[in-house]
Image (cartoon, rainbow, N blue to C red; front, top):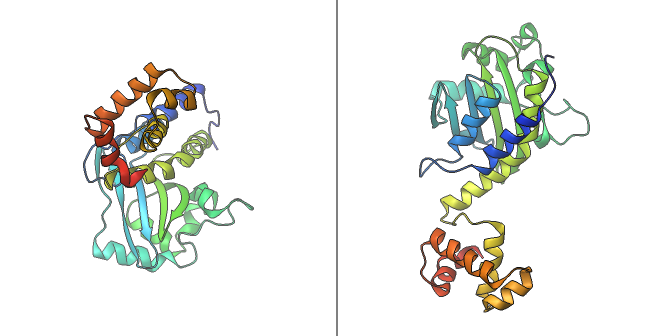
Length: 251
């Protein structure tokens, strides 16, 4: 369906979106900039990172809609309609779309499974119609504990998502679950350090000198000192001892 060629420019933009992910609000459960970047690559009226506790029938998340990023919220009536339809035929199970592919790796358009008229026969189809949603693109991620994690893109009118847009979401999907876990660590107070900076800190915690760390990592002592300077800035520490104290719960 439609253009299917993903360009090098698309791939570079995906990497930029992932690399530049930063929280824009202290309490956001995901990264606003990532949802905004996805909406630039794959135009949609709404892009949501949804966390659903299926057992307790609750949802939370972050939603990019009409140029603004907001917590994902539903009214009691909308929540009742959604969960009533969730477990019915035509609901939110997308298994069997791609045989042999785990549910959490599915990237699928609603139209890949149901035509417009057929979908209205199902409770979820009628819910989506009442909400004004015409086209849907879903990317599922591996659950986090009891939470089902999904990226959802909606268009209220116009054309369906193209094959190229599906491929773009397929390329970014593996990064989204990891970004969510990173954001959870940030919310728990873990500083955002690079993998190499964490390596340096772990060796420091074992009592290694700059010379020993450099030999272990195959870098110069000057590089180790530079890593430590950057670490001190990021964690707000003035010494090796203070830096280790501040991150000890995450080592």
